[in-house]
Amino acid sequence: MANTAPVRIRSISEFHQLRGLPKPAHPLISVVTIDDLLNLPGDGSFNAVFDFYFIAMKRLSGVKYKYGQLNYDFEEGGVLFFMSPNQVLQIEMREEEISEKPAGWMLLIHPDFIWNTALAKTIKQYDFFDYSVNEALLLLEKEESTLNGIIENIRQEYYANIDKFSKQIMVTHIENLLSYSERFYNRQFITREKANHQILERLENLLTDYFNGENITTKGLPTVQYISEQLNISPNYLCSLLNVLTGKSTQQHIHEKLIEKAKEKLSTTNLSVSEIAYELGFEHPQSFSKLFKTKTKVSPLEFRQSFN
Image (cartoon, rainbow, N blue to C red; front, side, top):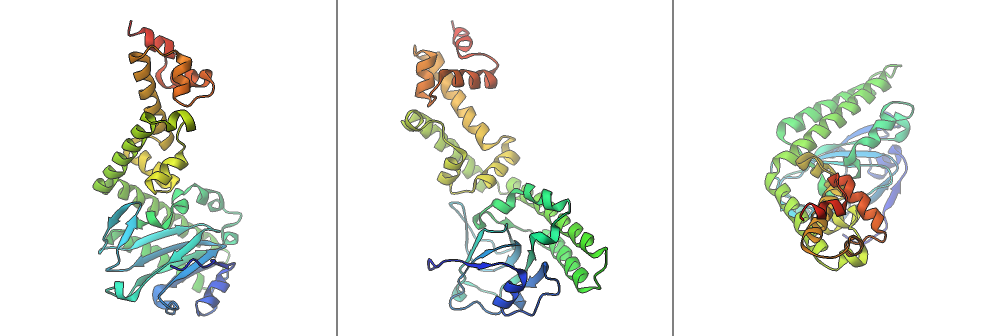
């Protein structure tokens, strides 16, 4: 894809106009099917920033996807993407790579639509809005059918005569859509055993190499951002994955490796606690001792003395 500046699309009406669609039936919420869209210009490249929420389900048979550093070929089911306002959407779709005509839908929700509703606050709790498109949700056929039904209910509601119940009914449908999506993401974490095992293995190797190398002394503890960048996975996706698979956050995995290394040094060397703290990237030994005791219920000295 050419490195062109993204187009900012400020309203749903502007999106409809840009894509050559009729004026939206509702200015703040719209369902657009892939069939509704005109062909993308050129080779299918699209680069834009939206001022609204964007949820899309696309079925692109015959297209290879890359999730993190793992390659998959998903011939069955749709792919679901979530984007918050101000995130960049990049699409590159070449006709020769697609064996069937694309299908699916897009749900566009302006923040003003959910203003002054409970969803305005709870929508920020769904981590998948912060996932990159490389960590999209891969739907089973029955899951796709469930979400398609919810989308059709939303469409029918805003095409009906708008009354005082319409907004809350549509908000409820959106909440259901998000709840089901959260359930399906958890299913994906659990069922993609091989891919998830590879991510966990890479995480373990990454942390081992980091704590055995010079980085820990010169740069301090690895950050969640650093770990996720090395794994080529967004921080929120990695944290969600680890929570489902291990019940622990990325930060907890980092601390576990730290404590493991600290115990090794305390039990096999004559280094002082201060020297060990320094080698593990702590500027102040007190901070190391406090973390060690929080995680192990004993101080570093008490741990060392237990071996005497």
